[in-house]
Structure formats: C-alpha cells, structure tokens
Image 1 (cartoon, rainbow, N blue to C red):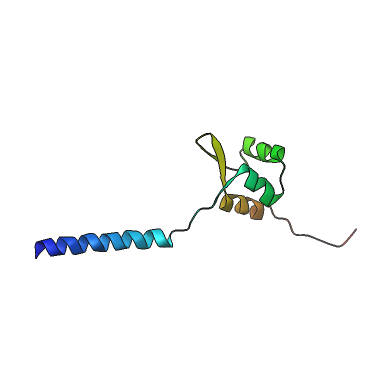
Image 2: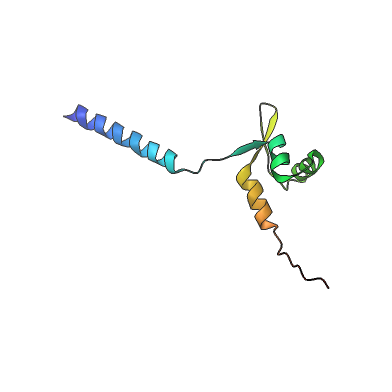
Amino acid sequence: MIRVQAQLLLVLSSLERIKKEATAPQLTWLDAQEVMEMFHLSSRTLLRLRSKRILPCYKLAGKIYYRKEEIENLLLKNQHPYSSSSK
C-alpha cells in the first residue's frame, strides 16, 4: 500500500511539473541576422544597441542571441504617437 502511494505521488509530481512547463511562456531566441532582417536594422545599428546596453543580448558558444520578447518590449516602450498634421 505504501509503495502504491509513493508511486502515485511520483506520478502526481511529474504531472504537475509537466503542467508548469506546458503553461510557461516559451522564449523565442533570435540570432543577429534574424534580428536585422525582422526589424530592418543594419549590423552597425545592432552593434551600437548592444554596446550601449540598450538591447540585452546573450552569448552562447561564441554566438550572440537576442530574445524576441525583449526587442518587442523595447520597441513598445520607445513608441511615439504618429501625427499626420503638418505645422
């Protein structure tokens, strides 16, 4: 009986872990080329944003990656309303 309870607890904890992983937001990682194409940036602009620490980046195995969510948040944060009226 105790063995069955232990196995049930193990299965339950596994199911809870799977549920958390399934509901956790998935991060989208982009390399420099993808960022430049997606957001119409030059390599120099991307380097400047990275150097000034405006755009966070992550280095893995010598290659730099960016989180798409962070780029989108940066764009939204710096968004200005467009006015078509000329003065």
